[in-house]
Length: 217
Ligand code: G3P
Image (tube, rainbow, N blue to C red; front, side, top):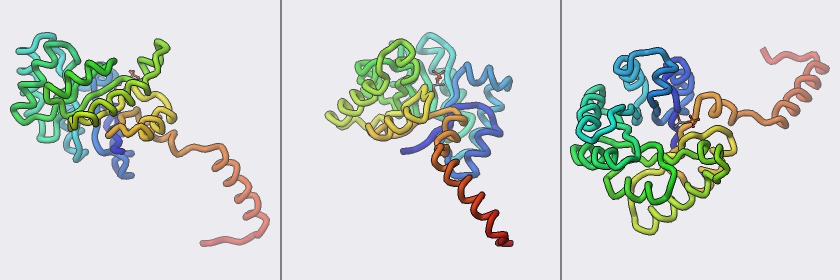
């Protein structure tokens, strides 16, 4: 499973990237707002830092304007994936931009039928939002499983990018189902290293080690 990091914070991306944990980055208008940075500048910095796809989202609502914005975002770097919303206009923009050879990430996907349309429109990535479905008591993981089944049934090569990941269990479940990629905030990726038995075991080792009076260095 490839890991994308869901943030526009350069320092957080750099820390994870140095560890080899970053296969790409996803941003959206809310994350750009949180960063307090100019979208073109910060996206360029991210693209310079990371080799994999960097999603940058259009903000227009109509297809022609989305296409124009997408082309401008794609000029930032070769690894830009233009992010468009899963609306009828977004699908039109996806078709045109993917036809021009740009990577396209279709975002705000909440149903299997939406995912089917995105694949037919040539999406490189489909982003089902797990956490936001869980928020309204719908099992987000079922959606990931349905999309996996449908894409495999028909051989669509659109990659499933599990998004709106809020917990480490979301990562495990999405990986078990076979999502191609997951995108999560840095804190969730770092929390994957945690286990109470690791902490407990380490504590016992350190106490016993202190009793030996030895040093390694
Ligand atoms: O990848 C999409 C993500 O940014 C949305 O996450 O937690 O705002 O639902 P969240």
